[in-house]
Image (cartoon, rainbow, N blue to C red; front, top):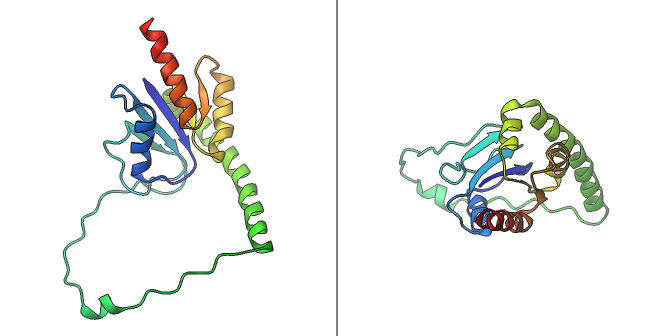
Length: 171
């Protein structure tokens, strides 16, 4: 089974382990990710492919050389956390984020549509999952272009579709 994940958020590698477990932990499920942002850390071995279509670069695992830690570096106090906005500032910030998300959704879909390799990956998918608000528009567009392939929002809905597809194959 080939599953394509559409995402506009930065995901940690553990997220893909969780997705695989939530999809039933099947060994026959291949996860392909089409993301706007790179993952928080390398995802080698967790997904079949990770296609970055937005800004940034893919992380690589770097092992820093061992250096002795100075005593004064250990005792340095951390700076205080920046206070979070509250009240009206918080509402304005949320409205600005929602407006940006709308622009992000359109930009994400434009990049998906403009990449032949991504569209080919989607064409071969058994299930397409939109993981967040920024990728829902792209998921809806894919569903309009490929009505025979289930396009769902979220992992639980994808699990139901995979179970349905597996049940249909066994009959």
